[in-house]
Structures are given as structure tokens and as C-alpha cells.
Image (cartoon, rainbow, N blue to C red; front, top):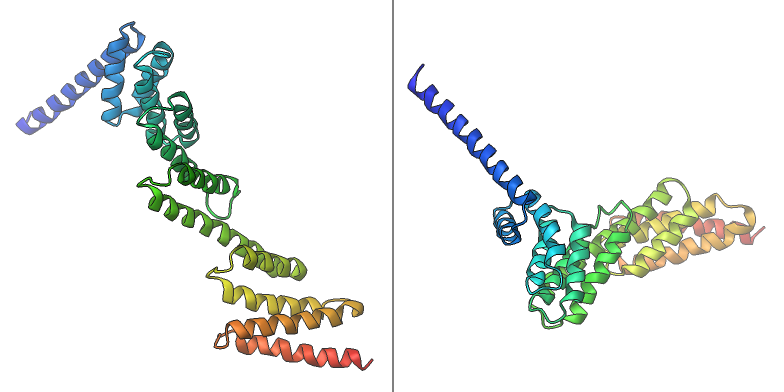
Length: 271
């Protein structure tokens, strides 16, 4: 057998032996009663990034060291181990509980921030249920209120901006969906809500143009008794849009809806 192949086989065998030995030692520690060794091993595994194996040890240590001096350290590592495993719901829960169980700990601010950070990480894409996104904003704001001098304030503000952008996008997309589904009354209401909640939205120009168009199409498809009022709304929304965006690329189309609405109003008034 060539020398290189022998070396490769030797390395594989050695690796397997060491892995088996390591697993065997870990299982002995896990099943044993030496809690100091369990703690030392759990911390070493956590520091090595092996949080999957650290967790069962910390889980047991949480009970054993409860109400002792080492309890704070174990609790801190336990919360961070959940964070390491990307279980942000549990991590947030234990970080928050840490601040309540150890109110005078120098780690309290850090854990309060980490709890809020976990809620931010649980925020889903903009098109999904926004409950966790709103909760994350509330938690980050609460942290800033509690620690106004924290060096994490700028980070919190940046995360809140990111989360609000998701809510803004959801509001815009929801209104646009009503428009695409030809539910023009709902579209107008939703566009108005978007502008009310997010007056500086990057979608403002398009939203205001679609309000003109939706008002026009709503009027066009209305029963006779509703047409006059809705054509008037079209003209009103056009004038506001034109004032805000006199150079808009949408202005030509918007003016068309305005002009047609004026003619329709004249016809209705002459009936």
C-alpha cells in the first residue's frame, strides 16, 4: 500500500478513536455526579461553539446551582447557549428572566439588550405576520428607555428603523394588493393609512398616484348616486398629488384622471 494512503488511513482511524473517546468521556461526565466537572466541561464546550453538547449540561446545572453563588454564571451561560443554538424565543425568555432574578448583576444591561435583540431576530419577512416585528420594536424601545446612556442606543435605533421599514413595506404592499384585486375602496383606505402611519415613506409618490387612480376607478365603477362624490375625491387627490410631486413621471396619467373626472362631474350636474 502506498505511503500516502497509509497516512490517510491512519489519520482517519485516529480521528475516529479520538471522537469515540471524546463522546465516551462526555457521556460519563453527563451521567456522572461531579457537578464542578460538568460546569467546567459545559463552559469549555460553549467557548468552543459546541453549544449542542453544552446545553444538556447547563440544563442540569440550572437546577443544581440554583440559589447558589454560581447560579448567576450558570443562568448567564444557559441563556447564551440558547442564543448560540439560534433558539431566539427561549434565549429571549431566559435573558429577560436573568434581569429579574439578578437585578444587581453587572450583566443585567447586557442581558436586557440580548433579550431585545432576540425578539428582533424573531421578526419574520415583511409579508408574514407582523406580531413579532411589533414586539421587537416595543422591546428595543423599552431597553432604550431603561438604559438611555447605553452604548447600544445607536444599534437599537438602527434595528428599530429596520423593523419599521418592514411594517411600512407590509402596509404598502397590502394597499397595493387591494388595488390589483380591483377593490378600489379598500385600496384608497389602505393607501391613506400607509401615508398616515409612514408620512416619510419612500413609496409616497407611487402611493399618492395610486390613490388618484383608485379614486377614479372607484368612481367609474360606482352606482350613479355615488359617482359625483367619488369623482370629486379623484380631483381632490390629484391636486394634493400635483402639489407634492409637480415633476412626477406619474403626473401625465394622474392629470388624465383629473380631466376626465371634471367632465364626468359636469355631465352629472347637467342631468
